[in-house]
Length: 163
Image (cartoon, rainbow, N blue to C red; front, top):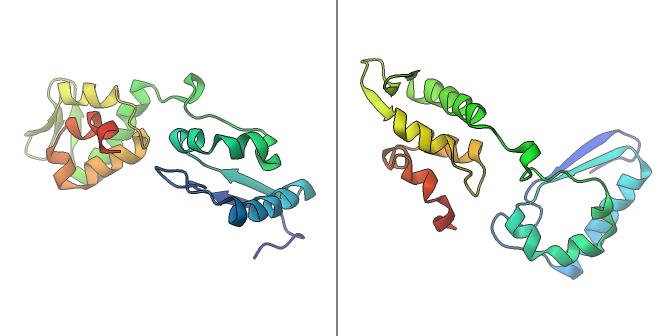
């Protein structure tokens, strides 16, 4: 329950679903109207996340509902894209934390015995990818899950086909 007296930030993550548009006009419009009223009052801020593919499928809602007339940030624009260096830092952090491995310029990621567990060429391919579900999430899944990790860079390069 949100109180109008408090300053609150509300996060609506994947508001209409992760892969398909799950929007019911009769059920969702009154909720969007209520959220809009809270936002207009001024002490409630709303952060809404939606994937590009879902937004395209729900475009009518975004074009017509007043809640979506406020400022938006499209993380798919060049301004917000991760650079290959930023992606490498994310991958390196996950590899060090989860796989206890370090990156070397000559081999790639090596384990505590000095054995290569992800070669330099695969690292290069991985850091050039822009997976459907977002680089940080997909790399996290890749490093955490042995099955995905053993697929190597194909786990990231085949992301589009999985959905």
